[in-house]
Length: 370
Image (cartoon, rainbow, N blue to C red; front, side, top):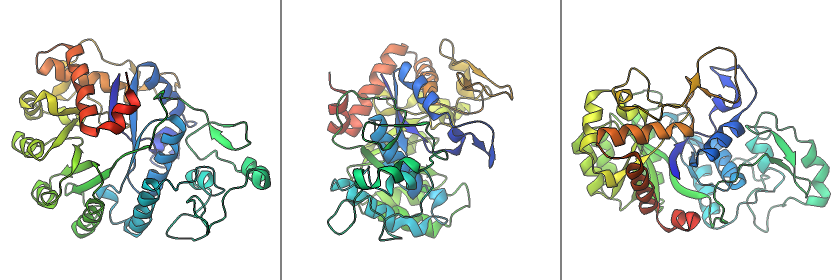
């Protein structure tokens, strides 16, 4: 088993949309099928409120884990959703999400704007003051919702509710689908969000004092390290491309280092990975982004696990696209790191799984079991 700690499940690319244009039908189920066959278990990561809800619903459906958060690049455009995200968090923690409500599936599919924090009629939080979904009274309405804009092919379950085709990852029943808060942090490389908005949202999410975080930092380490210094948080800084000194600070802080293809772009990146403590590395695809490109220094360390992909313009649903990453390519990350560190693939793979379990604790450990 390999745990892919960062899969952007809600990306429009898995809905067949690229740069606003529809190129093919939604195929996330095929992506998940390939992942499951390869024994890669992806964690679905949220980047703003809607994607967080979508990842939560998908994690519930596919019996895996997700994160909820607001990416720093979305901080300005989605700052009005912060309170809704925080409300979502507390309702998850209190077990008050009604996955079968009359609003939940339509909201995930983009068919309803009703959601907590903006409209009190939204009913996917369970409490006595809100009208919950009645199977008998609303069966026809549920069946009539057209969910073609969601990332699933749909089918009916035995109670008449629209449900996606499912790939079941963990065999055990999960006590929660929420593994961490994130993606959240700071990003000064891009200017899509103001520093003020980024810091405000990041500080509010840190104030939740959740057990684990999926963190983001890009060209902002001074402010980032200052902001986390007062918090005793656990988790991982994903898509790491910083210096060894920065990595050592994070490790001393009790955090892990997430490595993907973008962490292996140049020789300096490779040297950092070579020096990193093997027992503090976690593996991720960050799909559909961050595959190890041929031009990257890390590609020189691939020998046996280059995942076959195609680059033709004609869509092939049963193959990995060359320019769209998938969780299955984490095998390339494992091999590259193993060869950089001159250890066996199996030793690296085993260690990274152990690291992931240690990082996220009993929630993940209990799901994996023996």
